[in-house]
Amino acid sequence: MNTELEFHRVVSDDSVSLAVTLTGSRGDTGFLFLHGILQSALSWKYQLSSPELVPWKSVAFDLRGHGFSSKPVGAEYYGNGDLWSRDVAAVLDATGLKRVILVGWSFGGRVILDHLERHGNDPRIAGLVFIDANTKTAPGHISEECVKVLGATVSEDMAENIAARHAFVRLCFSNPPSDTDLSEMLAYNNMTAPDVLKGILGRPMDHDALMRGLKPPVLVIHGEEDRLSLPKCGEYTAEIIPGARLHCLEKTGHMPQVEASGKVNALLASFARDVFLEQA
Image (cartoon, rainbow, N blue to C red):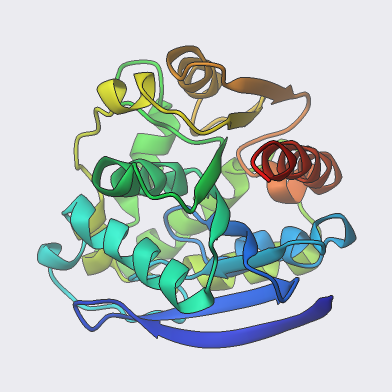
């Protein structure tokens, strides 16, 4: 088993270079982790370092416009679901994952749905996990606080912009993160330029028909004290997807993979054992 992190570059078909982190098994079965807006693959540090997940390959990448991935300017690089789906396909192809559980946190859940709209019959997709993800543009799913603070992250006033990103990070938690985690998050949250966010924000989302017909096993994890993607998001996702399992985590905010990493890792490991054993 490989317990060291490996760092690679994968180029999507529109020449966007994606920063990819890989660890775990050398095999072709495992997880692909997709992070949220303003975040990076480092959002998954407690999953990439988890002994419970070592039996499988774990792959995470900085979404286009984020972290160490390319940051082309223009809505044409971000406003179409085809682009996000192509990035997922490029990383799957490059890392050799043949049986994969897609794990989407926050905006990463949307990236999963963008991909499934175009590649829903991909035989590599063994299971799906949505973590504090909003899967529907509808009242009561996203808080007013979230809308307000994300709106300020595109401000051309640098002081206002930075303050908004710091507020966004703090809203991710029910309990304050460690100083180390907080400093890392503040750093990578400031690596996504306002022009990139302008291209990402505001795209309407309605994948109801797709979700009602999903065949892979689905796990939904949601923090009960999420102040950004409200708990209704997780409830809606679990309700509309046939057979989806919902786990609500007490005293946990928007970022359970950090705030409740032990519980999340145990849920992921159990889900992986069930999924891969059933499909062996």
